Length: 237
Image (tube, rainbow, N blue to C red; front, top):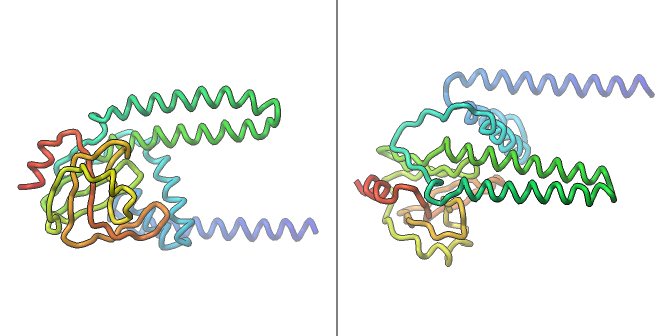
């Protein structure tokens, strides 16, 4: 029986080593065709079942932005979207609440179940790391406007590229609260409790993929930026 268990472990480890080698080889074959995250996403989606690949991509993305030292080089006109909203102050307040809750609940749970209390701490630490990574991604990934496309990125949460040629109109975002549950809109906002500055209506729908891997047909994009005047002027040129 012991020999059989060892044999199974060797087979599993060998299979895992082969899969890792194959992933690394496919990654190297992509050369300089994109960023690290783009190439990693391509390789994982080609090599693994979609749900597993999406899960791994989200985890890799989180740790990438958590430790990334320099902002990525960008091409196009950049627009930040977190400063005017005071998102940094909101984030610090949220993290403070999580820390206080973690300490208090840890001692309460520890009396009842030490294992559960440590699981609770681990989950909260993970949550804090995610918030930090998300903020760093927000700072490093501004909204970009090029001659042909509007690249909208909200941290590492979601993104969409809108060809300039299919933009039909640019309006105020006052109808957002009525439409925010509509699956055909893309919400390029950090806080859904606030009304976005712009509603960008499209001449034809764009297909995008959400974090669960499901496709969505987008007909409108709601967006907020720090420099409202420059954004509108640049987009209308």
